[in-house]
Length: 300
Image (cartoon, rainbow, N blue to C red; front, side):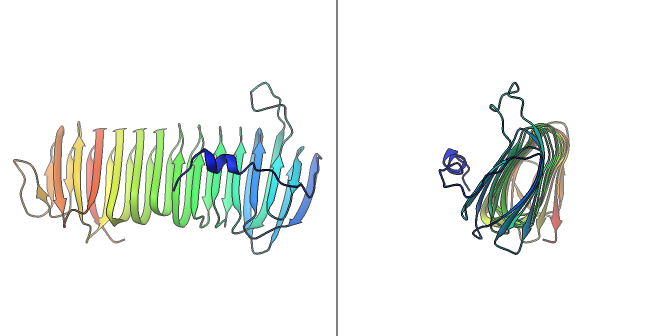
C-alpha cells in the first residue's frame, strides 16, 4: 500500500464537467460509474458519506457548493480564495450517497468526516475533527490533528494518523500504520504483514494473527503495550520496558542469562529481552519507556 504524491495528485486530473451548481441549499443527483472518483474539498464543515447499491451519486448540501460531474468523476468544492486561514471559506454541511466501489478523496479544514459502507479506496483528511469509518474499503488513509479516528472494516489496509486523539482500528489486514502523539491505539485484525504502532502518551493494544514473515513495531513513551496473539504464533521478539515489567503467556526460548525453555515468564523493569516462540518466522519489536509489556494467548 503506497500513499505517495502520484495518488493524491492524480485525483485532480482534468475532466469534462457535466453539471455545475452553487446555492445555499441544494439537492442534486447524477448517474455515475460503479467506481466513480469523488473529490471533496471544504474549508469548514462536516462530511457524511454513505454507500448505496446504485450507480448514482446524490448530493445534499447546506452552504455554497460548486459541483462538476461526469460519469467517471465528481468534484464537490466549497468556493474560496485558497486554503490559508485568511481565505474566508464558508461552512458547508454535506451529505453524499454514492456507489459502494467509489474511490473517494475528501478533505475539510474544520469538521468531522463519516463514511459508511464504502468498499473502494478512501483518503480522508481533516485538520480538526473526528474521522469515523464503517465498511470494507480495500485501502484507507485517514488523517486528522485534534480528534480521534475510529475504523471498522473488513480485510482492509489502513494508515491512520492523528496528533491528539486515540485510534481504534478493527478488521484490518496486510499493511497497517497507526500513530498519535497523545492517545491510545487499539488494533484488531488478521494476517498482518506489516504494522507500525506509535504513540507518545497512551497504551497500545494489538489483537491479531500474523502473516508468516510479518514485521511488527509497537512503541510508546508512556503506556502499556499488550499483544494478544493466536496459540500457533511463530515469532521472534525484541522487547524492552524501562520502568515496567514484562510478561508473556507463551512458552519461549529466551536469549537471556535468566531465561530458558518452559512456560510463561516474567521480567522486571529496565530489561531488554529477546525470545522466540515457535520457529520465529515473524519479527516483533516492542518498546515502552513508562509502562509494562504483556503478551497473551488469544483466540483469533
